[in-house]
Image 1 (cartoon, rainbow, N blue to C red):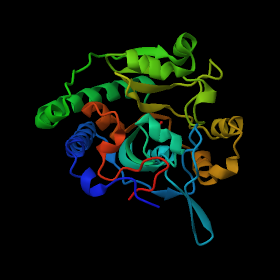
Image 2: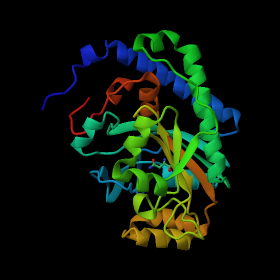
Image 3: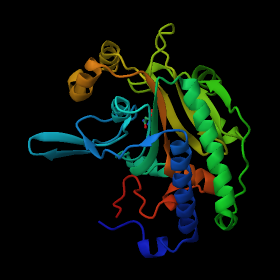
Image 4: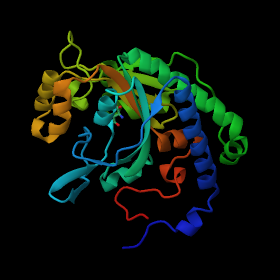
Length: 308
Ligand code: ASN
């Protein structure tokens, strides 16, 4: 099967050169911002017997090693929670493999291999990590404006620094007003990034915390980019009590045995926490104003295609 990209041409494309430079500044700024706030960077986990189930259909990325089955990491959510047994605040530049259906190539914002900055804070509330995300986002925009003037000029991108706090809308409000396409519609209309909060259980994975006094609704959030760039970040407070996690797995019609290793740790005690993950390539795409995410990395993995 043919490679879909002429890599020789692609790597000489001005958009790739500019976007990869911007991505490099983004990573540097994130690491510096978080280190200054006392976060520890942990190394990524690439394969594990447990990974994020995700709430949308994808192919399974699996490998066997001796008699054991491993998944390719879809997100480090469970490892983030477990790492908090050692540290109070952690982050990771985490490579994620999500074998998306080929039709996702059309969105311009899906790659089947990408990196997210994933972070988690022991004892934090959703509110606290939302504040952190806003602060970090603004810091990144300022730094890119400062360090990547020629790149932004070449890309014809003018960046405005949004005002804080970012606006919020609940999932319920958004869904009732705009229906299924709520995210696309709201993102296209928006001039500044905004939050969608309080998702229903059926929309999300079992690890986001369900409100004790509002059954079926979760203490979680998405950050959405303006100008139609769509979802930036997902996160929330977490379920951390063994019995509650088991119940949520069962509610999601999954088998707790699949999460054996994680549940064994949870049984001995996991700390309460909140956190989020933000896709680096999507952030780069937004900052650079690119419609196709493929330009944000030298070796894009385009859904459904054979890529080097
Ligand atoms: N990283 C996300 C989180 O912290 C989960 C995900 O990527 N699906 O909630």
